[in-house]
Amino acid sequence: MEDEEKVKIRGEVHRLVATRDQKYQSNFVEFRTSKVVYRRYAGLFFCICVDSNDNELSYLEAIHLFVEVLDAFFGNVCELDLVFQFHRVYSILDEVFLAGEIEETSKSVILDRLDYLEKLD
Image (cartoon, rainbow, N blue to C red; front, side, top):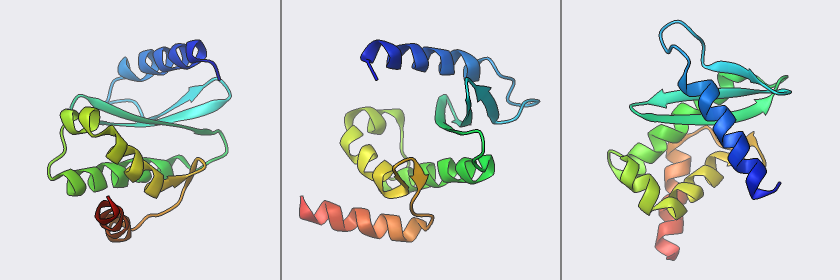
């Protein structure tokens, strides 16, 4: 996918998700031929685009797991951690998801693997 297309998709998803009423609308929204599953934490939106046949609730919980692992790994994670330590965020993402599917659902297993990876550095 070209960079222009990625920017266009990011903008479309942002407009779609940011304008939704968190109180009265669900965390799932149709997007082209897929669905966007998202969850808001403070001012940050965590979004995943999934097939229309996938279980939205499992991905909603996976987002929550991802944020919990971020919080445990960084010790009260903030936006600056995500920006300046993006390589660690990608490592965490790789432990939770593999090829677009949920790989691991145990917070302790993920944190143990991350601890092992940190020792290798």
